[in-house]
Image (cartoon, rainbow, N blue to C red; front, side, top):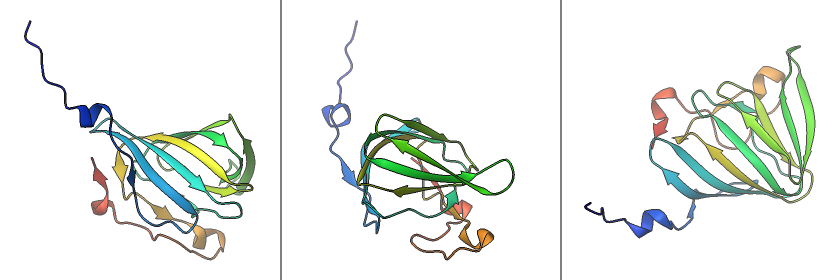
Amino acid sequence: MKKKRVNLKKIFPKKINLGKRNWGSENLLVLIPKVLSLKKILIKKGRKGGLQFHRLKNECGYLLKGTLLVRYLGKNGKLVKKTLKKGNVFHFPPNFIHQEEALTDCEIIEASSPHFNDRVRVEKFFGLKEFGLPTTKKKEITFK
């Protein structure tokens, strides 16, 4: 049987900082092309991401550290709050409106489909002020 050479950089990848975030940091740990991305996300106490949904991205996470407030669209069409603690998990399928706010410093391991730049901001729909990264167009989404 012929052995295929393995690229050790793909087996043991280095983390990649995904850019400045006003709420903390986002590092890509592993990218398995066309399969999944694995990230470590740090959210500083008192900071939050935008109220948003993803058109294609399917994401889930595990809270390694901290207390995280998650806002999401409930069945009644209103925003609902749920508090997650260390050891809790979440799953945000495509088109699920959500927002994460750190009540304490939080560390999250996030696994998702490898759709990047997939963001639709919805603060204005709920009469809230929009901040942070803007909505992207569907054609701007990349599937790595």
